[in-house]
Length: 74
Image (cartoon, rainbow, N blue to C red; front, side, top):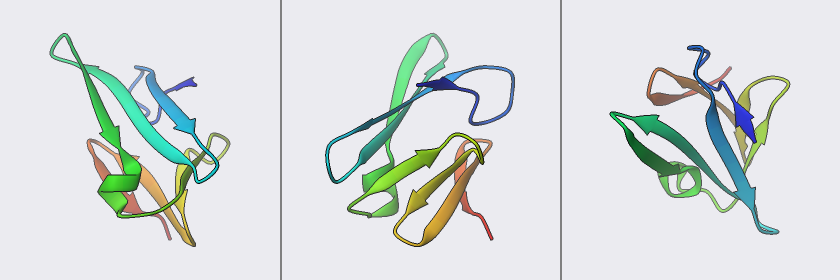
């Protein structure tokens, strides 16, 4: 899905596939497409995206994108 996860006015693409959800973020940076696999980044078996709260859920942890970093949401 296309959504503005960084809330900077530019949409990124969040893609989730598989039964054990594999989630990646795709964005354009310096005229190139850059991808980040959140399962690898968070060392998690399953990561999902909640569009309403603009957060990523890994197990019982909830994460937000702040700039170009993932930060734990409390």
